[in-house]
Image 1 (cartoon, rainbow, N blue to C red):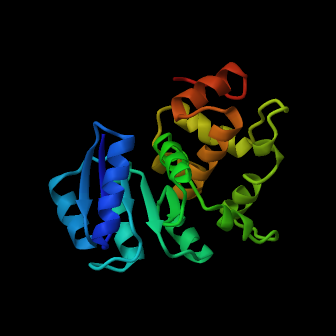
Image 2: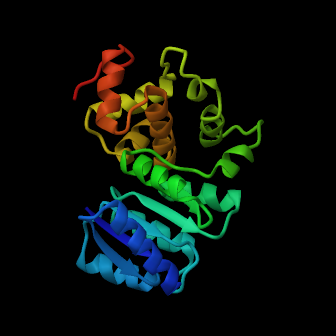
Image 3: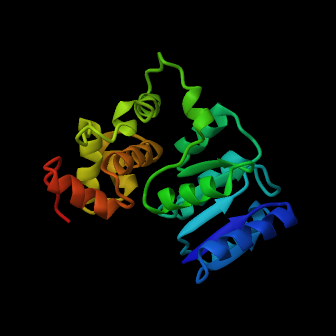
Amino acid sequence: MKILVADDHELFLQGLELFLKNKYPKADIIPAHNYTEIFNIMEQQTEFDLILTDLAMPGDVWNNAIKKMHEKLPETPIIILSAVFDKEIVQKTIELGVSGYLSKTSSHDEIIEALDLVLSGGAWLPQEFLQTQQLDSKSEADKLLKEMMTENLSSSKKAPHLTPRQKDVLEGVSAGKSNKIIAYELGMTEGTVKLHMTAILKILGVYNRTAAVMEATKLGLIKGSL
């Protein structure tokens, strides 16, 4: 496993490196102190399993930097670990292709849960962000965020149920399609695909995309082709 981790505060960056080394002892942790270093590293290395980065750093404005990172490595999940929390910023990072957004005040367990979920193909969002969504929002992403707070994610007594949109996403995964292709074919953003995958993983009680396809196929929720 190879992880690119970036923060412009040296002490915090060293702490992240130690944290990641403890969780992934065999991982290759590549540190960067700003966006300039990130892009220099990407010019030499093009394969990472995860990018974990601060939001506001020297070298570029965050929205432009994230867009370039995602365009250069579209299949590499990006998690933002920032002291900044603003629901519009969080939403924008999702639209730009980010797979997770964490506060620097997050607990050890919360960060681990987020890493596991994102590496499994889902998306991680702050609970504060989910709670601030407007109930009359009409966008698909906001509707999905509300759905993630409803009973089919919190009730373990009911039989697993997937919405038609979730089934469409999982059928795409079953066919071996990337998030980008699924998003294009379904007319949604990659961020929304990741949010659907998060919901699917939680509903089915599994930890990765392959297991989700297998479980949904077994339950007769999708046809499945893996």
